Image (cartoon, rainbow, N blue to C red; front, top):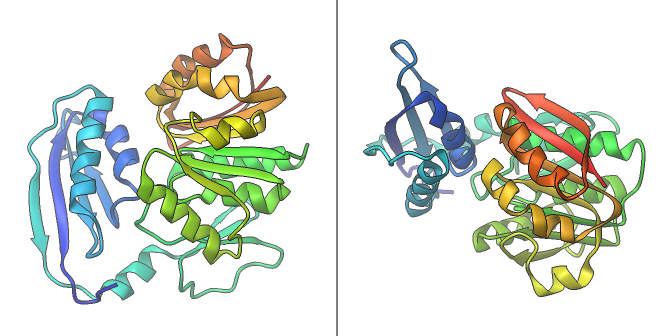
Length: 293
């Protein structure tokens, strides 16, 4: 980190129905994300703050992808360079420890002692999606905990792993002998590998660049008895066939990254392949679905 480096802010106006998609796509690429409306809710202002070590090109690409997924033309973006700040200090404020069930998730320099018997995870911020603060990640962690009370899993894959937080949570809960994490973004794959190392789990998982589960080693390791996919509603529906093809008989899938209003769209794609809804978690307008075969 460079404590004296300046920050960059992206400022744009969105229709209300597009705001959740933009929030999800940007939330872990930036250090702060604010959405607000000043009128009757017809338009919203989104402000995304990029840290000094952030990737402006990656943020610009994410904005384009968010617009495509939301089905809108990308609005004009106003880029602003903000005054220098003490970035180390600000990062620690943002990365205050977070409790989700038994898990205690913290940044590299957590100022607090974890609760007794907590399952601790150290996550580097701003590198890939998944610090635990978004409702979709939290919903997946809670779903994993619920499943851990009922059964064990031996072959697990985290699809669209981002920071690797969900693969690490699965490792702490079950110590599965086969554990994969995949992501279409090579930077995310490197981030997941580094976060595993930070948590003393260097050899606990195999990390692969892949669009879903179409990758040689992943296919060779299939079938999996637990598949986790925290992405977005449209990709989840498109990946339904390939995900279900590598699910073991009696296996479980955790799906998240979808709005509550998109539940039926996603459920239909997986019910058509013989799965049924076993559990559901809703947080802040977002849904996490647990499906079983």
